[in-house]
Length: 105
Image (cartoon, rainbow, N blue to C red; front, side, top):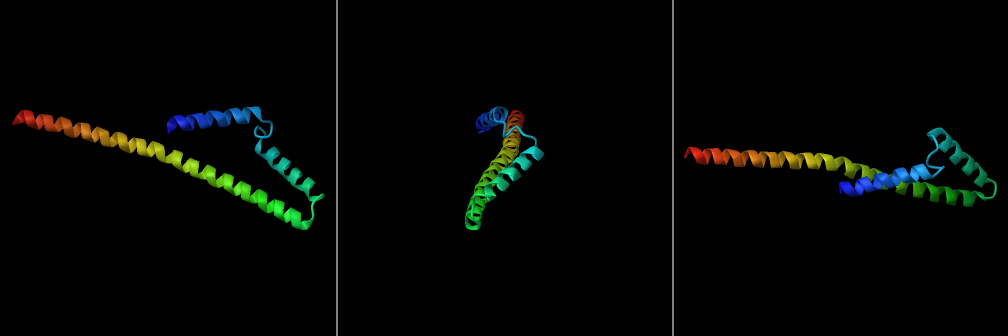
């Protein structure tokens, strides 16, 4: 899974480097979103504004949910890897102790 995460990370870095929108600083990114929102108000009825606004919120929520789950899974992997390494070390130590006990018999 770590290979896939590295691949995803390099893809994300390439996307951010190649996209003007994703390379903007946070304040400019927010201002741009505000400007787009204000520009859309003029040509839409109240019902259309509500429908499109809710749609965009739903898209954003879905993206945030997916990225939060990916972060949670990535944070678990190092912990699981460490636990597996610790278990293997303990098994190796047990095997060495058994050999020592067998020598003493």
